[in-house]
Length: 347
Ligand SMILES: [Zn+2]
Image (cartoon, rainbow, N blue to C red; front, side, top):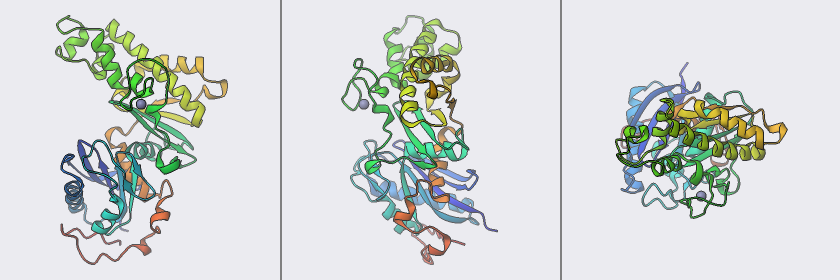
């Protein structure tokens, strides 16, 4: 029997990654290049086609059932349109799903990258088996996605669950969105690094500045220094954990997930922060919400990729039906090859 797989694409502002993923979430072939983010959509779509040909050549015997794409928002998952991601120059209302469907001869599903990662963790990772899940990624910013009853929560125009921009205080640094008090502005890895930089000075001999080689301190340095029992770093991480606990409490109240999964660079320090996060949740959440497990993501940087695959392997999110009927019998007969010699004919 031919193994069914999805062509998964993780279109990031810095890296473009393409893989073939089977129904167990296993990556059968993988290729990546730096995204030519300044070169415009035509060049990047050409990069996608080239990588698709590369991975297909690595595993030619598979039956590829469709293409799942995780891309930076804002985007319209139903229409398959990249609306205008700030990290990709010149992308304004690009009908990416239609373009890739034509070029690759396969059904294409487009999803917000954070939603795709949520789906990956729910289908194959830390949230496997849960009915509902909230995924929060804490790194440069804060993003996330919500899976409710086995589906991505989309909301109007696919804009639901913009977790990083919920207001959790009325003071502090201004967020990139222009508002004061966003979760992201207070609790992202960037915010943690900024507090650590402000609490130290180049050449002061602190552990944090030694780890950063006297440059600006990052959130990762704080986690590293806290592991070395550095008192300042531990205090900074404690404050970070309190803010995360406040934000997570809001998410528990709003979405009532079975599990809250934390990913992103700062999640590497989750074990150090968990006692304070859980104490904050116990203090702030209503009783019925206090026992929801907060766990670390399992799939790392591949969460978005396998989540994108899941979109077509399982019709997760359920919008494929609106774009194109699902099932091998409905695939276009791609007898012709595309210009990279890539034939993606269903078995
Ligand atoms: Zn904001």
